[in-house]
Structures are given as structure tokens and as C-alpha cells.
Length: 314
Image: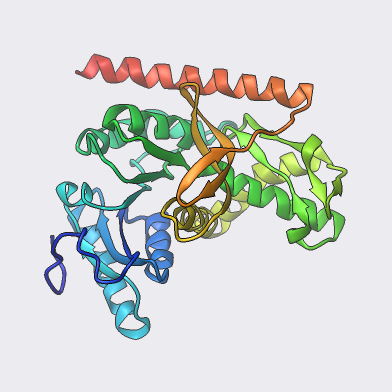
């Protein structure tokens, strides 16, 4: 492990309640996640790894420069072995591939990203910390990482971003503060996302939801970002930090994360207290229930394809 000073064992936190977080992936999202985590008071150390040592060292050096000016978490370039001693991992690796899809865009990365995720999961068997999966398709790959590593606290981040976008789109449509909107997007982070319009409220009252408009906005918003700056980064990175604050018991609250629901990872509202999540059940309409069943079937089928391919390589 490379850095300006010796790391020592992450368990020896110099500050009560401080945590060590590993960021796996030094691309656009990994860089943004690391920068936000470095400013969190509960995050004492950041371990950085990527597909190339050069990328990990570059991000570590850049973060170390920033730390000299603003303070914050100490960054270190890490090995796979080092990552096993962290309190939490953020997985945002992306394989090199060209995505040409215009529909079901996130699922297009499954074949390319699954082997990369599998390699890391197999090197972290028995991992005891929190894992936040960012790599798409996030719901399938969260399940894949959990099954291969045996880690028990693995969460996907996609539905948190979808829910934030949904609330913002609805607030703008109704011209109200976004804080007055309460509603969720669950299921898949992708084309099978379930907009829970029937339980959405504005200022505590049932909301009128223009489903066609908000569905289009959820689909088009990331495309506009990608087209203009090359990669969506800030929204998912902020969702990661929000989730880790709660999962590492720095604060209590509600988040929408992909979790194990009877064997399939699905985006679900969670009440997280003292780091312990409990699924908050929603009352769904018949349409929403059917959509959630369809999302479960789709994600289950996608998982079976990589399981077959992974088995053929063993």
C-alpha cells in the first residue's frame, strides 16, 4: 500500500467513530465518491484501488493534494488484501466496452462488468463490512457480489438516485419545494423501475403524478448528463455518501437501496436506525404490483445468465 505515511491497521481509528472506506474504481464516479467521502467527518481513511495501479495512485495523489488545503480523510493506494479490513466498500468499477443500446441501457453492461465484479468478490470472501454497489446493472451485480463473496451487507445504489430524480421532477412540475414531495421509485434501476405514484404525497396530501412525463424524465435525465459531460457522477456519488452515513450509523434516516428480497435484489425503501436497515413496506396499486413482479422476473433472468456464464468458466 502506497501513501505518504504508514497506514497501520484500519481498526485502530484515531478518532472515536471514524471509519475506513475503500473505493474500488478510480473513474468519474469513483473520483467523485472519494472526494465527497474525504469531506465526511466520520470518514478517517480512504483506500483507493482500481483496474490499474497507475489510476489508483493518481487519484490518491490528487486527494492528498486537496487534503493539504482543506483537511479531511487520509487517502492511500490499496491492494485487494487491504480492502478486506475496511468498514465499507464502494464498488464503482466499469469494464471497457462500448454501450450502443438506446433501451435497457444499464443492463447492457452486464456481460462486460460481471467478470470484473466476480474477480473482486472472490478476493473478498467473508467480508464483514458494508458494500455499496454502483456498477451497472446495479441490482444484478449487488446480488452477484453478495453470492460470490458471502458478504451479508450488500446494497445497490440505483433506486436512491431514481427516487431523488422523481421527487425533483414532480416538485418542478407542481412548482413546490422538493422537500414537500414524498414518493419512491423501487424495483429495478433501469427500464423496469416502478414509480410508486399511488402512494406519493405533496405536503402530506395525495399527489397528481403525470406518469408519462416523470417516466420520460427518469429515462432522459441521465442521457442528457452523459451527452454533455460524458458520465453521470455527482448524483450517484451523493447517493453513496447518503447511504453510508446511515449504514455506518453516522445518522439515522430513510434511504432507497437495492436489497435482498427473497433472493432477488430489488430497490426498496429502508428505515436505517443505528446502522440497521428495515424494509418499509409500501401499499402498491395493482399496476405497481404487476410492475414489481415483472422487475423481479427480469432481474432474476439476468442473474441466471451470468451465473451460467460464470459456471462455464470455472
